Every structure is written in structure tokens, then in C-alpha cells.
Length: 270
Image (cartoon, rainbow, N blue to C red; front, side, top):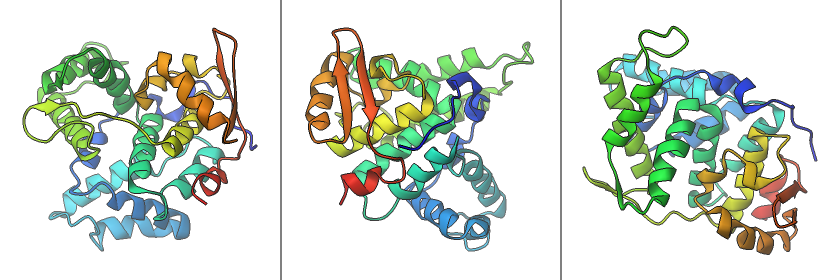
């Protein structure tokens, strides 16, 4: 299997906060981004013109197109290392089921965007597992407000309007992912990745923390929407199919990836 760089999460380039998720969430159909990703690997210099000149996202103003292009370049067409790039080059192809591409894109954003990752793990998933049926923009605004501090130069200084837009656009994206219902009241849907998508999750999780073999210690574990108590049984069935090796000693649930990031999709979807 290809080696990954030994970066810790706090050392990743995606450690700096930005609000690109609000521009990505504003797209009519986020799945059009997959075409831009594929174009990036086929013709790397074509992506900006496809967004701004060809207007593939059907965006009315040049200014907004430029903002979307910046957001995609910053958060989507960004890879923490060669293994991440190899995985992205295969996982967003048309032959991958749409539901699995959705989860892959979700985890891709978690890797690349600190704000999206922290809202997801510290607010969205916690609320999902808390027993509450719904989540509100106020839940997210309160969290993002804690991140923003005009008196601390090390923290982002976001306006009240930005706080509101981040919260509403985040929930809009979760609606497009079908994680919550549409409408003003956001009720949680049942979120369950397929067996293939769950296998992909293990590869994304290892990219985020290359040195962590114990999946129970992964900081991305909440984003698979499976409790620590239930994940062992699901992974055991997948391990028997040879997608990865797994061992459990009662405390640590160690996962050893058996395929390269470049070939794993070919194995899963052949």
C-alpha cells in the first residue's frame, strides 16, 4: 500500500478556518462539482474557465462565479498528499453510485475544511446522537460564534451576517446530502453509509490521521454516523471480504488497509 505523509491533524494545510462551505452549499446541485474534479485530473488548467467562463454551475453573476471558483480551488481541489489525490481521482467517477459519492464528498470536505469538520463533529453529529429529532441554525451559530473573536488576532473575525450565512448554508448542504429534511425545521433523516462507503471512510480516516490504526481513536469516527458500539460488528463483516484487515483486543479496534488509495475503488466497485 502506498505510504502517507506522517502529518498530524493540526499540521494539515486545512487547519486554517475559512468559510468556503457557504459558497459550495449555495450551488443548485453540488454533484456538478464531481465533473469539475474529474476535469481537474483530465485537464488541470480547465477548471477555472469551466466555472467562470463556461458557467457550468449556471450562476448569474461573474462575481459569484469567481467566489465559487475560489471556494472550489480552496476546499475541493485541494489534497493533503498524493494518496488523497489518488483517492479523489477515482472516487468521484460516474460509475461510483451517487449515494457513495455523496459520502465520499462529505468526508473529503471534512478533510479539507476545518470549519466544516468541526461543525460536523462537534455540533451536527453530537445533536444527531443526542436523541433530539431536529437541529437548528441557532445550534450552529452559537458554536461558530465561539470560534470567532474580534479581540483575538489568532481567531477569525466574522461578522454577524457571516455567522448566520455559515449556519444556514451548512444546513442547506446537509439537506442536499439528504442528512436532514428540507424546510425551515431541519429534522434528521436516518444516515447510514453503504458497506462500500464505510470502507472508503476508513481510507479517509487514515488520511486524516496516518499514525492512528485504532479506528475508535479516530477524530473522524463521528462522521461515519455509526456508534463506537456498533462499528465493530459492521467492520468485522467487511474485513471478512478482504477490503481491509481488522483486529480487536477488547480495547483497540485496529484497521490495516490492504489496498492502495488508487486501487480501492476498483476493488469495491468492479
